[in-house]
Length: 358
Image (cartoon, rainbow, N blue to C red):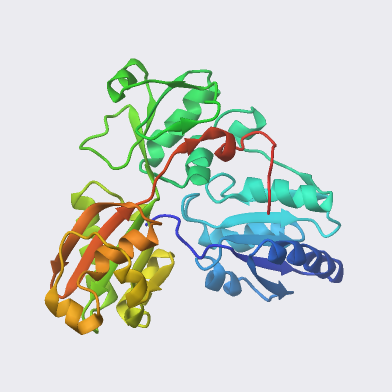
């Protein structure tokens, strides 16, 4: 699933009295922004970090960079799965992103903390210091699934060398297209470029060696199941149906079902595993969705509405369109609905300092 850890969870670590004071200062800022913050003072050894590494989105060390590097080293995998890791010295003079500057958001957080505390953000990633478009930042801020890491790296390298990259979107495009990209009207025109970016609803066969597909995270999975269906069976079922349609599991933004399934262990665990919300709706709310593709008299008699999964998907997506009608298998049901979506470069591309908020 890639980067789908607990959103809005931040770990703060300090080692001195002065560091503790600075930690409490930024803790208030982070909590005011809606984050859940965990604070550790003078932890012994490095075992504690393993407990948090895959459970938080951000880790901020208040102290020396060397301590942070040594503690993080055993847990580092790659920028697509590691949390954002930053260091803020105990005097609050410098804030340094160490890991996951783009995908994890460490660079943005460093800039935000610098603005809020008066520290200087020390940004070292190549696209940032050269003021260039970064496709991984674009994907993160737009809520897009990056389908090929190697292609993303190749695109960044070509942009740093001054090459133009083709850009095609199936969705409306708002704002100023970055100068590093050349927007085209059809996917076929991407063949004119050594490397290109295609923003598409789903993968359509082979993307081509020169095309990086970016897929929007805009799907709601309406799900239902018999009592006791295990998470693994549900996950395999949902993943299989997504893949058959060309969707990526990372495009699922939330799970949705009827409120009587709110404590269904398999569904709860799947949402926790994928790090997405699990929303439930009452019978009256579901019944208010008038148009579905089919109705089951048995289900209606049992729970009060004859098609839970389609109604839940539509409600969860804010009235989105069905991209998968109700499908059933071994006591499980699934429907998918997609939210309206668009590319807005003015709101999403923050490769230059601009409007930011914690």
